Length: 230
Image (cartoon, rainbow, N blue to C red; front, side, top):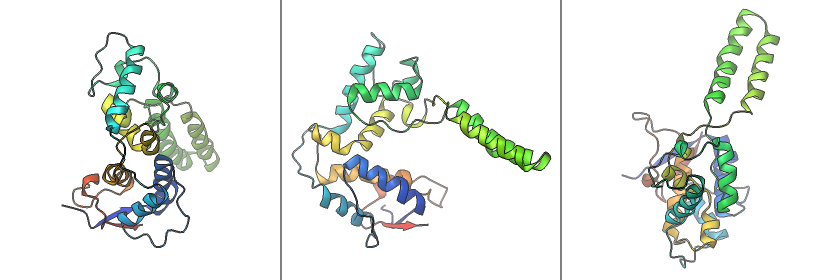
C-alpha cells in the first residue's frame, strides 16, 4: 500500500536530501521549490534538468558490485566475494581509509562513513558527560568537555555497520549516490529506474512512521505521496 504522506525535517530536506539528490543526479535544483507538493513534483524537476533517455542496458547494482568485487579481490586474493560478504573481514583498513581507496579505484562517490566505537564514546561524553559536569562542576568545564569530545570525534576511524556492513549494502548505497555517473557508464536509465533510487533517498530522509515507529519503505513512496516538511 502506498503512502499518502512522508514527513521530513525542514533542515534535513533543505541541507541534506536536496543535496544528495543533486549530487547523485548531477543537477542543480532551483532554490525556490514552493510549488513542490508531492514526491512526483520534485522528481519532475529532476527529469526536467536531466531527462531519462532509456538507452542504458546494464543494471546499476550489478555494475557497482562487479567493480567492488574486483577491487576486493585485489585486497584479499583468494577470498570468494559474494553480496553477503562482510566488509570487516576483507581488509585491515579503517572504513574511512577504505572509502578513499574504493573511490579512487572505482571512480564513484562513496556513502558517508558510519560512526565507529570511538565516535560513539565521544558522543556519550559530549551529550551525557558535559551536562553532568555542568550540574556537578560549572558551565565552563562542561563547555570544554563538549568541545574536546567534538574535536576528538574527528579522529573516529568509522565503523563497519549500516551501508558499510556487507558488500551488498555498500553496493546499494553507492548505486543510490551515483545515478548520473552510472548513467554515463551505460546503466539502465529509464524513468522508473531513476525513480527507484530517488525514492530511496527520500525514504532515508523521512521520519519513521508513527505506527510502530517503522522506517519508511521506499517502495511505498509513489508520485502522489505528499512531502510534508516539519
